[in-house]
Image (cartoon, rainbow, N blue to C red; front, side, top):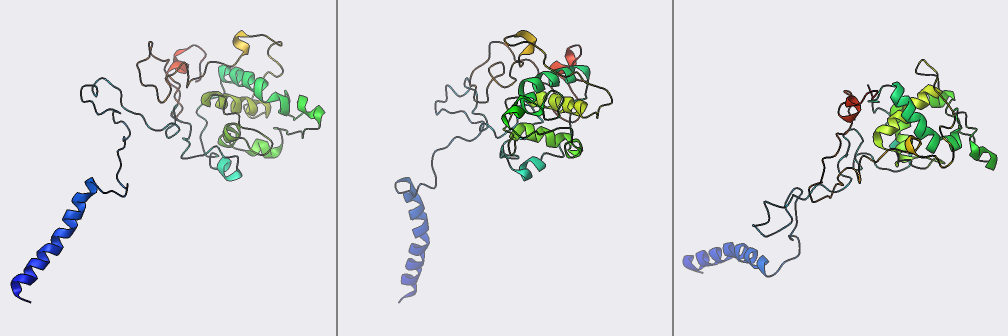
Length: 249
């Protein structure tokens, strides 16, 4: 084989990958497909790109209120290790009068049916042979605030998830439970707050996620700006709660 023939074959072999790569335009194994990256405008029309808002992060990938662990960090699984992973979360809300009052309301609505008005487990469910689950045992008193928060968020064992309670309201419930346990240095009010059918301030407050707050995939401009959210970090409280009299301190 002559030297020129060998050179020609070498050049031909080097050009094969290049030619096959160009064929991906017509022959594909579907490893590359059209997609929209986070915060990319979902349109190919260049005239609309400046007027349309970008596509947000997938729902549940980021916390809406700042301090609640997102789904991908801490799941909503009702498992001991999942609850334990939230044990070190600091309580950002001091047990002020407004926090205790709000926690009392949500405790009466959601918790007293099983745990009883005073947290001793003698709730109405006890008469149906439901186990008496006291919040005033040494084990419950020894749990961290983050653990109690995780129990409300996820549920565990016989307790279902009470994630319907807003993130910051859960910390108020934790503060109220600490009051029932005698851990805040003063007694807290107990018992029902209203009568059957009573509304007004005896009902849960408005949700902070929707519809009074733009949902994660909201693509328009709200008619009125949402109320500033409470700071859910461990550094303190700002926004709506700090602005209103008697808010979280």
